[in-house]
Each structure stands twice: as structure tokens, then as C-alpha cells.
Length: 163
View 1 (cartoon, rainbow, N blue to C red):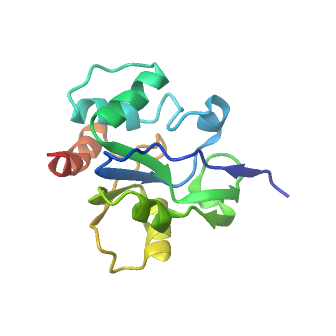
View 2: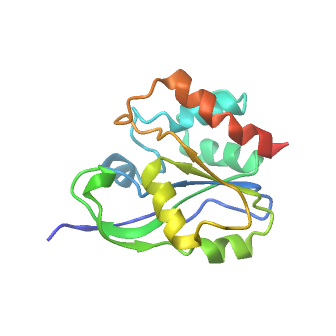
């Protein structure tokens, strides 16, 4: 029997316009108790580049910058069993209450999924014909071998919804 792991609470407020959904934190993120805590994950580099913000390692500052730009962050999986950090190792998963979160935050006008697992799970949770647009973005994980430049180009879609 593998250890059961849990997601973090959502980072969201009443000004959030966009939510980015991952699958569930990896080992390094769980150790640090931070979203995208693995030093090789490109999430924060991409976000800072998109928002024209100066990069920082300070987690509290990272969260402040997300909120300043009306970005929310959460995971589609509330808890699961997993050995290591691979999404393909996820078993016995329980979904987060995405629909309730969206109902409680009507300003959210687009959902961006960080990788295929997040996107597939969200389709199961919300169904295909949800009322706000859902976009699949290439995973920021170091295991996803698409170049940083290509990931950044795809992730630029987010900026359109922030204006």
C-alpha cells in the first residue's frame, strides 16, 4: 500500500479571473509545501516571464504576484496514492471540488490545465460542455521534454484572458 498524498488548498480570491489547474503536487512540492516546488519545474519561470515580473524564489512573494495578476492556482486531484512524482503512477484518486470553487468565484473566465492528466481529470469532473473555456497547456514538469521556449509560447494564451 502506497502513502496517500493530498493537494494544497487553492490559491484564489474574489478578483481571480483565471485558474491554473495541475494534477497533484510532486514529492519535492510536498516536501516544501509549495506549489511547483521542484527547482527544475518551469511553472514559476513561465509565470514571471508572462507577467513581466522579476523572478523570485520567495514563495510568499510568488503567491502575491499571482494574486496581483488575478491568477488562481489549484489541482484537480484532492488526494491519491502515488509512488514518486509521475502522474502515470497515480492510483485511487479523489477529485477536488472544482465545480463548487467555480460557483463560489464567478469572476473566473478561463481554466488552464498544466498538462494532460489535469486536463483529462477536469473533463471527467466538469464534462465536455462547460460554460467557461478550458485550455490544455504543455506540462511545466521537468519530465515533459518540450523546450522552455515552446512551453512559454503555448502558455502566452493566459495573458489574453488577463486584460
